[in-house]
Each structure stands twice: as C-alpha cells, then as structure tokens.
Length: 118
Image (cartoon, rainbow, N blue to C red; front, side, top):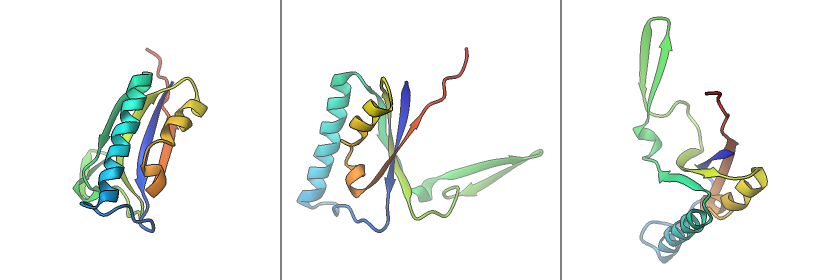
C-alpha cells in the first residue's frame, strides 16, 4: 500500500538555523533516512516543496475558474515536503516516517493513498 507522508512545519518549534552545524546535521539525517528507505525498497519519491507563499490555489465554481496566489488556507503549520512510501501496512509506514527529521521539528502526517479501480 502507498502512503503519503506530509512534512509539516510547526511555527512554535524552531528547527536548526540554516548554516549552523545543527542544520547541516539535519540535512545529513534527511539524506540518511532517504537512503535507508531506498535501500529497503519502500521509497517511491521524496521532495522538498517551495515555501507556501509560492502556492497557487485553483477553484472552479460553475463556469468560473478562481485563482488565488498563496496557500489554500491561512495555517500556522506549513507543508515543507513529502515522501511517498510503498509499505506493507501503517505500522511499517510509521516506522519509516519516524526516521524523517521533520518528525523532530514538526510533524509527519501519514495518509494511505486510496486504491482506485482500473
């Protein structure tokens, strides 16, 4: 089963500042987690996202397409990236998600992907 792991930044928890040794260690930790997942055959894809301010939101209402610059909603938390994992079950997905540094400085939201027929 596929699981989407959304990396959620929480504003009340500051991660390491860019350029510090702690930040460099966090980047190494992301790389190590990704390499371990790839070696185990569970990593489908992983990427960081541009800041929420770069988002474009599209809504179609009737025959009108409405475009909004910026994120869908005003949220304190922001999605900073994602992992797509192919795991046997939620327990396995949780084990791998716990390795992602975002779990230490924010949260990792794990969602099973719906299986669509055809």
